[in-house]
Image 1: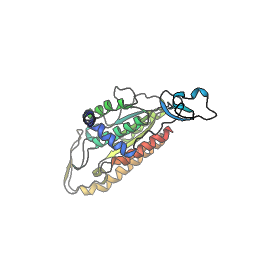
Image 2: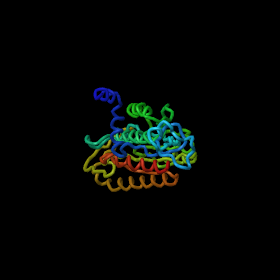
Image 3: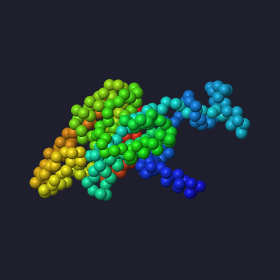
Length: 285
């Protein structure tokens, strides 16, 4: 049995294995929205009460003792969550080899969130991919393969596509695009009744601008090189501009009824995942 389990685990995409580890650290055995209600799946047995219909009694279970039991089914009210993570070339960067690339961390957060959502009975799909929303663990492996294999040519924001009203969109990336572009996308979906969450993933060097002296900066998306003779002279202006950009993200998200969160890659992914899962789960209650 142990060998069979090891063989099965070996077939799973490494991203899925890592995502499951993170997800189960945050919410062990999560199945947050399971409760009794109309549906097809068995939920639990409970003792018969005077207001229950006799049709609900499970006679086979009741025959084991003197107490009649009712078979309850699990409520069917799964929500649909569309996930997207930035796979553009600029996400393939880290300031230290001990840190993950921004793209790796964004993919891990996206996949771990998918694990939690599936285990809570929700339907999940990747924006921009030809996969219909699915629930159940069979939805996870194709998603992990796509998140791992996405080419560098992808855009830094998802393209707008029609989503079902009351669906949820989760956008994970560095969100360093012009605020007008992000605002236009968020407004478009919000006007269609789509709820959403923005998660900004950055490297610690992007937060503090720790560079000193003569530094040449090379772009990852065909931007021209920038040579600074004394990099420390622009640090204060850079940090101020980044703060104003982030304030703008918070404002546009709040205006659309969305949420915004920020994660730096030198921090544990569990912290960001727990906050995001709580924000999404709170809307489903």
